[in-house]
Length: 478
Image 1 (cartoon, one colour):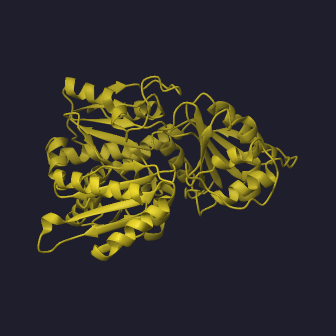
Image 2 (tube, rainbow, N blue to C red):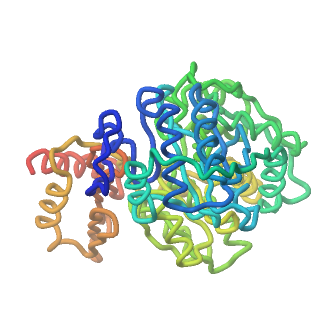
Image 3 (cartoon, helix red, strand yellow):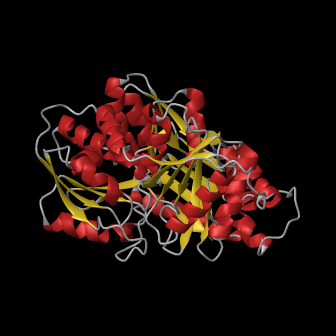
């Protein structure tokens, strides 16, 4: 896996230092728990947060993993010992947590969510936001937090103990806010949807949402909270995790299906026939209802996305802008550009009206809203956007991803009509005299794993397969 690395300010020893360094990622802290992330780690992390961010009031939430309760308790104890006030939400999804911080209108200096997102049961972690819900990640505080962990992890409290309170209204407030932003028509027809919560945090939020939508009938799959993930990994970008959802859709009569990840900040959609909708195609679909309300809005889409995404955004009256992969980077760019919406192939969907954070629940409501507006099945809507043949993301384990990227850039740059380097490289090849030959490929080093990721697209499946074979060979030889 790829982790943040830099010279430490302190030489303090803590377990195996390389193990501890390895859990500080570009977007969050994540690692084996309790093997590495245990209560002692959580206390040291709390001390480091005080030293680095000097908060006076912190919001804390957690997911349903077996180690989350103890990590939450140790983290809170460390903060309280420094005189920091803490508001505890308890069990919540990451979108619910983020929106709760935002709705507090500056009451919090810092928010910490205890979760390992879609990772397997033996993992846990921490996600961080500032009081304005801007994420703390690579280039925005994570490096400094890691330094503070080693330098100030053993700090003792101030002697003045902070106050602990519980926010018992967070769920209802979140659902009310999402419904307000969805702007659903009052005459929504009856719709039947299959939803797989993956035994994750969507199982807390969705029942509250569903009961407020009398027109919506839901077939629930795995709504029971279980941090061991007994049915399947809660990661909708992996087709195999949607097998149960696909089975239900093909056996019944539904408008669509939705599968959530562990902390419910991502959602994968399937049409009524059980076919998955890729994250970039979903971005194009979700942009439409937003642009009908906010004409001319800027929509961000990541470098892996199909050409049909910017084409659809333009046709819908929006301004398409390509961005790099990763939630902390996209949220920062949305904030800087005042973008309306952003979507990733990884099925994160970001909304300016939610302080630029994700909401899988709002995404689901907007999808249903767009289906009603179109008056057609989701399969037909998606088929209209199947203009190109995308390879999907293909991963390679290579010794030096950046060397491979530079090698292929050198070979192909002179033939490219456009070179995009906001995240690795994306080289586009357009042929005005023979548009059927148009194609592009992107190569980028993963931010979370030691992998090189290839995405490629042409106008036909046969040609895409040929190009993938060709580029794959060059990657292995580089």
